[in-house]
Length: 289
Image (cartoon, rainbow, N blue to C red):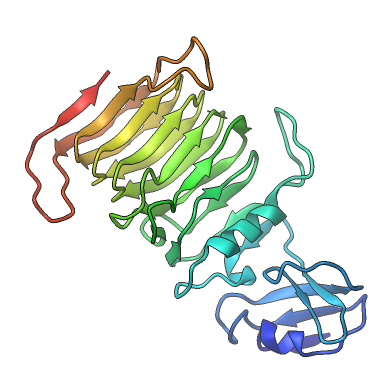
């Protein structure tokens, strides 16, 4: 089996279909992007996980049950939005039900600060896990950079990272009609508006999920969000609110647009008035219903 130092070196090779090849890294040897590939006949290649070789065959990433974004070209020195989107395409199951998605893949992320510039949409059953909120961070570089779990979205556990809005990103962790998802060890901070937004989200569990130093609201329940449980949350120094209930319209849950029966167990809710300029007056409201 042929082994290459990098993906760029592999792409220069002439390799027949049916063979396995490996790399010691994605960009350079030892950079955490080491991977195994199966070479197949010519087909479409995304240029992140799959790569066209010199003779037109394609090296297809062999990822087992998970996808490490470093194996798709993620780096702490680039905009990782295209890489994250490519990983989500690979991780998305071919078919789902209300209870399972057998071929969904877990997206894994190593330690470091991973910058991104656009909205990243996580479909049902696609989950992302970092090393821990003190080691893995996603940093917004534009106002639209956020993680969104969009409509009718269920399944699995995500966590182990910090969402750093960088005082640029707006509404940086948004759950929209999520059902029965699990989130653990997440810190959401420095959004120019809200940190965590729950729109119509039902029956989700949040364990050690914290929201701090966001310029408007740390935790927003809106549009019928209900029966969500937060265990051990710290909500600290929201700009105007630490916890806020709202009813901004009737979509997507019609008459059931008022948030109900959301519970916080053992929370720490303290201080208000976050200002990225460093002026932090204790002004605002801890909880608004």
